[in-house]
Length: 180
Image 1: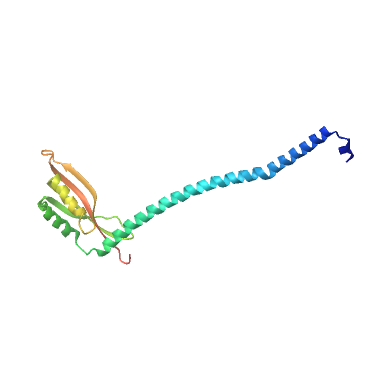
Image 2 (image 1 turned 90 degrees about the horizontal axis):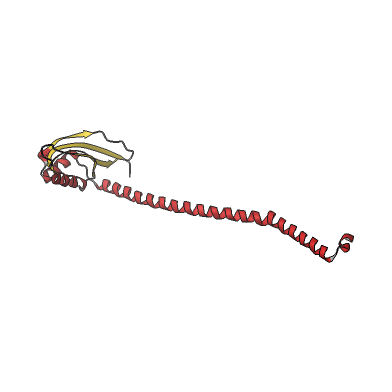
């Protein structure tokens, strides 16, 4: 303490100021700076988590929409009565007046599925107009049975571009046994 008493007022103020500065520096370095860095890290994590939550909600909405579509299709398939796809396609061709234009209908290999049985038929027709073809395809797609056109190839004739030849694949679906 003798040292303190021998110091002048100006030196005492300087030493006290230096001591306060060292204490403030240590307080900032050891306590405040890590807290501020941790707070900034938490803010970044909050922003990232909010972005992930938004993405998750978007994925959830998409999943629920797709699940609704699948449930609707499954309900339609459960109500659907058994039918022969060949007979139904011929019936629709008769209704649209193009039965005589069909060259052949033959079964094709279907893609296996865990949930659905798929029966596919390749239809080839020639000598149809675009209006007749569109009418027939519309009848197929809007049929009460779940019929879907999976592939379509249309070629105009060389001598008359208004007359078409078409080849397409129509698939029907049923639920596999034990699937609900």
